[in-house]
Length: 114
Length: 115
Image (cartoon, rainbow over all chains, first blue to last red; front, top):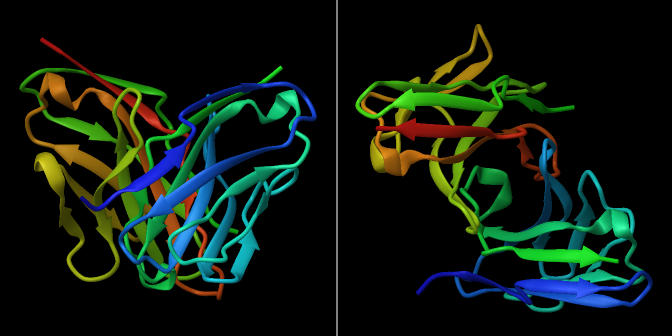
């Protein structure tokens, strides 16, 4: 089954404790992206990747890191989480990002930073 | 910079009635426009897109959207709403110009369909 998987689905942590949210897709998509969803703000893009070893900042990259060492994986790293990073996070992938391909979304990761 | 506006936080419709969820956009070049739906505790699902061609785009679950360049709008429509259509709907836009591939989402509109 074609899908985007994220782990963990739920995470409660404390300020400053490094964490990684994994994202994996099995559709051989070149383009992958991370978003955060907050009430009243919709989805905002954190980082995206056009292909392996190619990443770029979205609209709200501060406090986050990403890497794209393999085509299928695009982990989101929070080196020192803070309470304002409490949010619902989505990973997404698509074929050629420049050609208007629709994005496939993972199920989401609900992160709470205390 | 590209942007999307969804002016209604919530739309209430009776089952069987037509529904419209509004979206307006702003881009510097030609737009690529999308609608996504989010059901409770789920990720977003693609509904339909406009890239070029016919201004009326048909998508999944009986939804359609009309691209209006002069009004910079891309409203989502369905002739007859179902209770199961109740969900959160997001409009999104991508500018075809430029080298970066960034999709900008609206703030979402909650659709509530009642019996």
